[in-house]
Length: 90
Image (cartoon, rainbow, N blue to C red; front, side, top):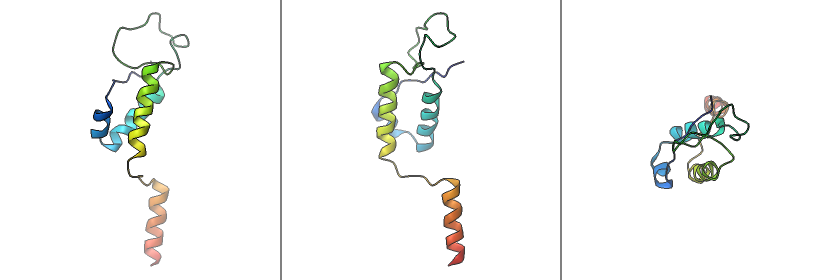
């Protein structure tokens, strides 16, 4: 089953927590490439984003990238480990 993602405005995205934005990114990337390559028989009439080959998906992903580019970078597990080790040496 493909991922379906709700449409959100740029203002709604800006108000979201960074973790929620990353979850949205993951859901957008899980969308199927196109209707033709999916196992669906007929297109749904929902207002959700389902396929990557649509203008809606491209706009949603660009908006998401725009908001995330302006956010502070979160350190990953490896970076946090290196910071702890450096702090312990001092």
